Amino acid sequence: MEHKEMLYVHPAPVRVWHWINAAGFIALIITGIQIRFAETVNMFSFENAVNIHNYVGFIVIGNFGLWLLFYFGTGKIRIYFPNPRTFLSNVIKQMQYYGYGIFKGDPNPHHMTPENKFNALQQKAYLGLMFLFLPTQMTTGLFLWDIKGFESYITMLGGIKVIDSIHVLLFFFFCAFMIVHAYLATLGATPLAHYKAMFTGYEEPH
Image (tube, rainbow, N blue to C red; front, side, top):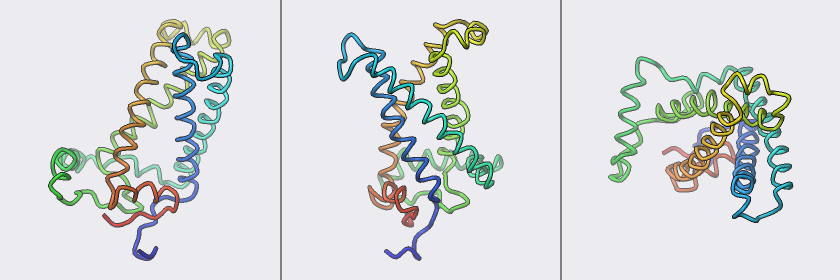
């Protein structure tokens, strides 16, 4: 299929950000498992796990800052915000599609365009992910990185146990997210269409 028959929906900065983020998430999950379960997991030393976790964490934070600059600077941030008038009906249609329509060969109710990249469920999920869960995880990670330096904020938010619990709970959330995300990425025009698109920028019409 020629590029003229395809949709260019993933600009180069978005693709670079996506793969840096994906690699960072995987590294943080692996080192996080080593740190949390140090007595039973022995992939590498605890000290190395902590150092790698910290360095990669700062890379992910910096990468998130670049994501914010790109999307707000270009105005493309609006693709994450659903239309309130059609949001509920679109969510219902998308849930019906994922629940049983896809198994019957029904067409996807959402038609991707560069200006309307995400379906209603994706918009809802990414709003929570990018504007709540990820910032919270990065903030709690910073607090745990320098407990003494952020002591006043930690105390104000309930103490180190609260901060650590939030960080660990979100760690499990992101583990589950990576699995679900990898599966949903196979639901394009072909099982590898969405994966290819994150390298080329071009999406095949569904």
